[in-house]
Length: 409
Image 1 (tube, rainbow, N blue to C red):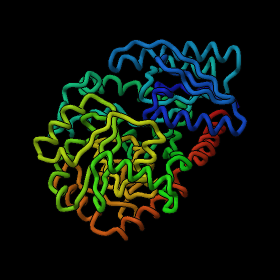
Image 2 (tube, rainbow, N blue to C red; image 1 turned 45 degrees about the vertical axis):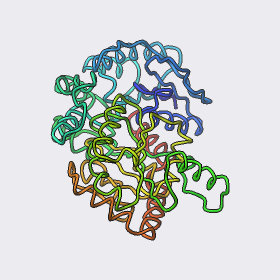
Image 3 (cartoon, rainbow, N blue to C red; image 1 turned 90 degrees about the vertical axis):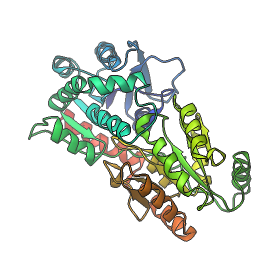
Image 4 (cartoon, one colour; image 1 turned 45 degrees about the horizontal axis):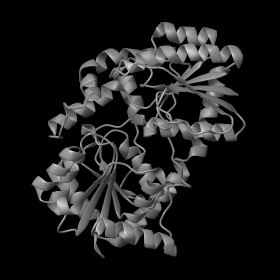
């Protein structure tokens, strides 16, 4: 089968979408299928995979409007590709590509049926930004993309409605996203919709091996670099430094329990908020207990999960959210929000949930989770098993193949 992936993100643009498209393409190619990924042109070189062709197209670097310009370029490239190597199914990754009804009709009539993965929604993104502002996150008006979403999500949601109406199969990445599409996007009663949660690389994100001298040495060196003493807990938060990710809430909550739990917080993420978050830590009097890293490669992040006692994920909105799964696969518990798709992955057997936007709820949950090493270890083991049972890359490939065959039959 020849599958054409239309994705606005692909390595070196990793992100959640870039990561899932890369891994799905790799797995499908390993199974003998031909994959063509049509993505936005970038500065870096995309990784080369056997039987995966990468086609980069131009796009207009304007907030939200890039989804339209990229969509037009992608459709032209798709038609050319099909004329040379016939495509069996088109896998569209929304919302970072915006096609209207006529573009969907042209794709279906001239190329192949469309399967649309919904990685979240623009209206949901807007809700997350509104919540971030309500709960006092820093710099909610400083990012041009966030500002565009605040004012233009309604308009761009119309392209998502086209995807829902015109796709042969719609694949939300969580039950929460499916409910969002049904309740606010006028999904037809007879639509073919199947929720498929994205999985993660369980061979990269693995638990700490207690007998590995090199791992123990690396952990000790890492803790020393951050000034973390023996017996001190390391908390980890991973995610883009953007308002809707909730790092301001996390810092306020951590300031209430840093001393009593003998803990150090490490935040890893790219973005423009590092300076603001560092200044916030200083105002809260916890700058000696907080380290913010601008970014790391995947191997190093995987190590950081293993070296931590607890992962905290305070995001105000996600279509699904991969960070909790990466932590669970690494054998550490996850503390996250009792909202949206996150409870579909995390519960009290693998971590804990806190009340959205509540500093007190989050601080109490941190203290509770760190109160028992035995509980942390048990929840970490349960989390690893849950990922192996329900959230693997091979499982993604098998389920999407079934969807592709259904769409093209």
